[in-house]
Image (cartoon, rainbow, N blue to C red; front, side, top):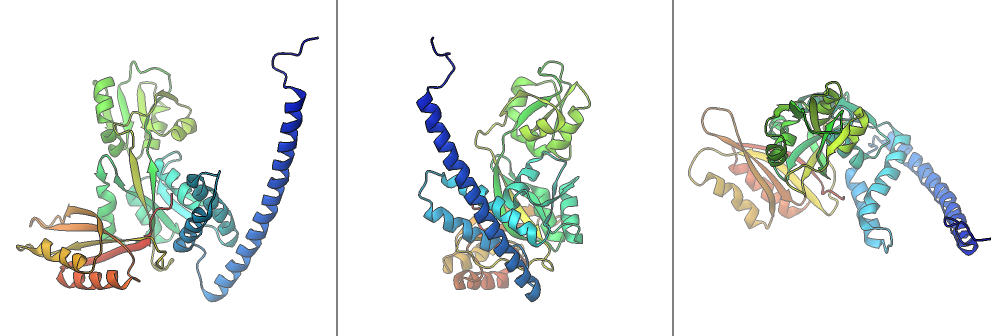
Length: 372
């Protein structure tokens, strides 16, 4: 009697069974080790409570992940190490104290994905209706941290986030970047009859060429977030949204067209912000960034003089953006990212001299570079 075409040979079944038994045994061992780690995390949390320490130390988590990447011999991919250990550390941290994180909502936004990617899924989510609300929520103490977009590889800086750094006490304790894949979402799986496309203004700009080619007559309607656009598109069959696959699943929408962003490598950088009364500034991790905003008097050579201390002390600048001061006098604020941490004498000296030549000087934070 011939064997059924889809049946596995006995030898293959036996080999698979043995391998699966080994995997099951390792899973049980891993679970036991993770519980031992969680027990130690509880002891660490108790010591922190006794001595006034905080549960989340971004520089410590960055050092753990960098250390594990350095000793990883594979076949586990290097890019898999950070998300695995962020989830482990998130679960252990949740045993010490709940972590409340505010971000631009509703569910399904890229800001939510950034928050989960940075803190892990064992957090209390605090979705907000706008970037302004994220800053207000974190400033008022309704959330321990906020996650805000600050820069996109296609459209440049997120101006509203930069402006809000000037007027709130929040400072940056971390960063994360996210590959942004925009999809055209709709209740029906067709592109005909779309009257308007809804998305955050940044997303509309990032998909400008595709929309011009494929939906030239559809209105481009800005909304507070991409996920909010998806929510509204789920209520009206004539509307479409630009949002993540997660948002499509959340609101029951079809992906009419995938990956419509003009730049195939489109990424958004997010800042992790908190109030200085609830979280100390991170110590040096070995791979750090210092962000600051400054202004200088409007005179010849003022910007040159501002950059001289950086060159003299060998401090590299990785970002330099200007924003109008809105004073009516053609004055500007300059946002800068420097490589290094003020614990480094070179960086400390450069910052001290830079402060002396600036009319306005504010350090927005020194924090570990993105470990993803």
